[in-house]
Image 1 (cartoon, rainbow, N blue to C red):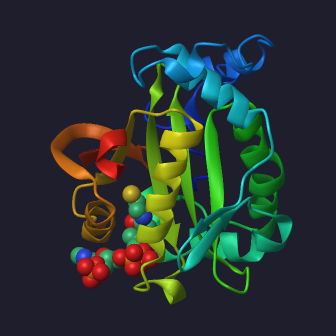
Image 2 (spheres, helix red, strand yellow):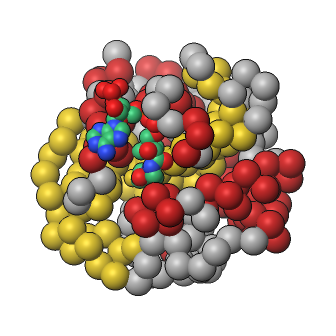
Length: 240
Ligand SMILES: CC(C)(COP(=O)(O)OP(=O)(O)OC[C@H]1O[C@@H](n2cnc3c(N)ncnc32)[C@H](O)[C@@H]1OP(=O)(O)O)[C@@H](O)C(=O)NCCC(=O)NCCS
C-alpha cells in the first residue's frame, strides 16, 4: 500500500504486472456484467462467482463512497491530504512494517492520491480510503485489495498516524472497510497479513474479529525481502 516503489509481491494488487486488471476490472469493461439480472438477489452468496464479479463491477464503476465508522469516517484520499500522507510514510513504524525504502516527498503523495489510487479504483483492483476524524483531517489509511484470481477474496492493509494511535481508529476503520467489502463487493473472505512481530497490527485484526490462522513462511515481501507473516481472516458470516 504505501511503498512508492514496491518490490514484486503477489499478495499486493499494486504489484501486479501493468495491464493485469483482474477479474472485477474485466467485468467492469463488460457492459452486461454490471447490470441487474432477475435471479441475482435470489442466489446464495458464495455459490456463484458472478455475484462478487458483478457487485465489484457495479461498485468500482461508480464514485468512491464515504463510509461512517464511529469515531472516524472513510473517504477518498484528496490532494489536501498529501502532506499528512507523506508524513505517515516517513514515520519509522509505518516504514518499518511496510518496507518503505525511501523518504516520501509531497510530490510522491500527490502522485499517489491523484494517479495511483484512482487508477486502482477504476481498474477494480483496490479501494484506498483516507481515515479522517471529526474535522475531516487525515489520520491514516485503510485499503482493501481484490484478488484477481479469486474475486470473492480480498486483503486489507492499514496504518494510523502516530499522533492518532490508541483511539480505536484502526479497529473502526478495518471493521468498516470489511463490512463494505462484504456488502458492496460481494466478498466472502477478507485476509489480514502482517510480518511476524507486528503485535499492534495483530491486536487490531483480532479486535476487528479476525481469526488467526497461522504463520506463512517467507510469504510477505517488504522492502525487497521475503519475511514470515501471520495470516488471519474474516468471513462474511463472522460479521453477521
Ligand atoms: C497498528 C496500528 C494501525 C494501530 O492503530 P491504532 O489506531 O492505534 O489502533 P487501535 O487504537 O484501533 O487499537 C490498537 C490496539 O493495539 C494495541 N497495541 C498497540 N501497540 C501494541 C503493541 N506493540 N503490542 C500489542 N498490542 C499493541 C493497543 O493496546 C490496542 O488494543 P487494546 O484496545 O486492546 O488496548 C498503528 O500502530 C500503526 O499504524 N502501526 C504501523 C503500521 C502498521 O503496522 N500497520 C499494519 C500493517 S499490517
